[in-house]
Every structure is written in structure tokens, then in C-alpha cells.
Image 1 (cartoon, rainbow, N blue to C red):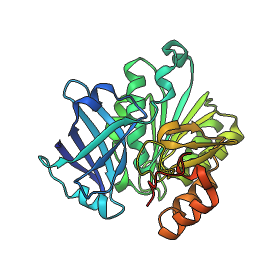
Image 2 (spheres, one colour; image 1 turned 90 degrees about the vertical axis):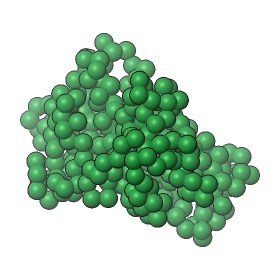
Image 3 (cartoon, rainbow, N blue to C red; image 1 turned 180 degrees about the vertical axis):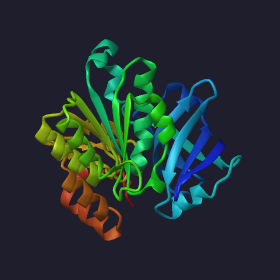
Image 4 (cartoon, rainbow, N blue to C red; image 1 turned 30 degrees about the horizontal axis):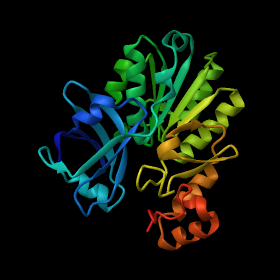
Length: 295
């Protein structure tokens, strides 16, 4: 069992939890994720690791209520436990394996949309602890939905806050802020965009036009986190990839976002899953075709 040692409401329908999970905390890195289950009957829910404390043995997760299972999670209190807390899963951010001195020479900009701020934070914090400065564009629909602003301000070289409705900070979307920064003479060697798929798609359209290499963190539907169920299948360039084992980070200029978004909607229904099995054949289940992970 994995006890919740801290719970905090960050915004409407958005919650932060610190969970005691020493084994995960010991080996996780920025960019990875975990899968949680409340009890034996609970749905498997993938969540990005927002932060970790190796000494305390805790993992910080941020969840947004979007359905019955996340509503149940939001109802948990400090002292309650998760039945399963599996991880770390996925590949760590490429930043982790890059030479620090080379990173210090790069101009890096993060674009975080909504709850995407949670997985951006540990990467920016990791860079800050190693003396690497970066710009962060952090946006949401309204001021009330912004999360982790003060935490991000402490680790970002420059923080630019945007709201779609202009209720706080820059009036516009993250892409609008990025355009303005570039127009003012800012140059970037790398962009890392994390947020809703539609947001990442438009960031990538812009950065391709601007000639800025871009990494995205994909968050499609996942079931088992091992690549067997095939739920998180993506097309990246000319290759089939699975976000849970090949990612979650990919070259944003190669991701077929339209296909990923369409597939995510289809996968939510039983009829849609049956159709995908028919269309994708043996590759539907990560290549094995027999696990039945989406039933």
C-alpha cells in the first residue's frame, strides 16, 4: 500500500498529492510517469511524476478530475492509500543524458499548457539545480486554473504567464507569447512543449515555421504501461511508436497529432476499440496481437 502524506487543491478540479513510494522515488527521473490504482477494482490511471524527494521517499503527482476514477482519487484524503503505484515508467527526458556544459550553451524554452505545467516543473527544476537557465511559458484558460506558479518562478530563468482570457499575465495562448518573444529578438535552440495534444500540435506548427527543434510529451490513453495493450500507439515519422515505452517524449515535428487525437477519441468507446483492432491488425496490441489488453 502507498499512503498519501499530503494533499492540496491547486485549482478547480486539480489536486496535488505526495505519495510515499520509496522504490519509485529512488530511481525516477524527470519525464517519467507512474500508473496508480485505488483498489482491486480500480482503473489504472497514468500520471506524470511532478516532483520527487529521494530522502523522504515521496512522489508528487498532480491530477485533474475528468471521469469517475479521477473523481474517486480526488476524494482521497491524507492517510488514505493507493493499492498500486507502479513506476517509474517510460523514458526519462533526453535532457538527463545530455552533457551539462552543452546544455548551458543552449537557449531552451518550455511551453506548458494547463496541467502540462506539472511535468514541465521537474525538468526545469532539474536544470536549475545544475546551473542551466531556461525560459518557461506557462499558460491556462484563466487565472484561476494556473498551477505551480510560485514553484516555477523559483526555478525558471524567465517565467512568462499567459491566460487565454487575459485575466492574468499575457493575454493570449502560449504560441502567441512565443511569437512575441521571438519577434523581440529571443532565439531558442530547443523548445519542449507539454500540455493538451491540440496545444502541442499548434506549438509544433509554429516552431517548425521558426526553425526551432521541438520535443513533446505525449499523453494518449494508456492501459498497461508496457506497450502490450496498444492503447497509446502513435505514428512518429514513418514509424509506429508506443508512448508508454518509446516515450513519452518524441520529436514534435514528426508526430502525427491529427491521427493521435482521432485515435484517442475512438479508443474511448467499445465500438471504436473493435474498429481499431480490425484496422491495425497485429500491431494493435504493441505487436503481439493476443494480449487482449483493451478488452
